[in-house]
Length: 170
Image (cartoon, rainbow, N blue to C red; front, side, top):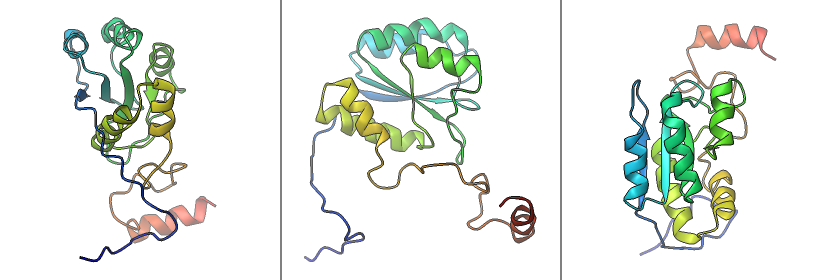
């Protein structure tokens, strides 16, 4: 068989190691901390949280998240919206979560963050190296900045909205 290269600007090195003890947790109101604690007690090494808004969960989860990060569990925050971007510096909630060891995963989709975290933890046990891997785009899974029209579901946007935005957003 022949292999059709989509990108010829780089070589691919296959590293087929994957940590299976990784989970996605979709946050919901009144979520109980025992969900996080259970993952840690069962030996999970990575947790991707799909938070609300800009990447938030409620304060009763803080102690469980802190226990997880203290035990060396890699915890990454994504958002539940398709075009969302994690902005954890805007409100105290985000800053509090970062101080407890949660790493913002920019605009990576939760499912992509799950696969990437499993792969990163399969490559190394060093959490600083895991962070470097997670925050370095491999295949355009994050964008360097949020585009002004990133929230539009339509490719290219709705024409009348595009015209309006082009008039006021340079």
